[in-house]
Length: 100
Image (tube, rainbow, N blue to C red; front, side, top):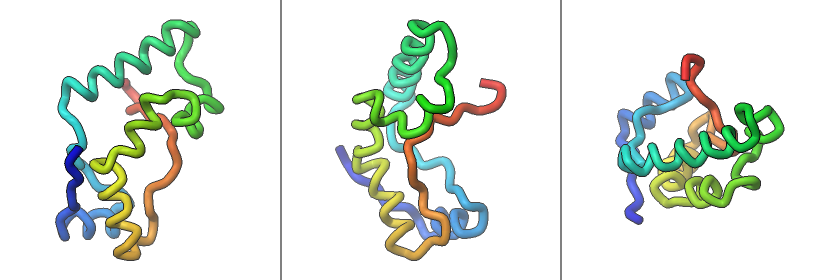
């Protein structure tokens, strides 16, 4: 797995807006595979994840734990923290777009 560095423009966007996107950390097929794993969990339980499952979801799902420890995800976060960005990303919540 190859790590990646944020550009100065991305860091500036984070400081201004509190987020930066896009930060490409995986291929579309890989993202779709992870999404399908989440959807399979939701299908088995007959509903979307409830709040307690979304908070620190990496403790429930090994595949999510692997994702948040991937250098392609961690390195940009650490880069922001090392540069003293005011709102470093943290946590492990699964957040979906409102219409998703």
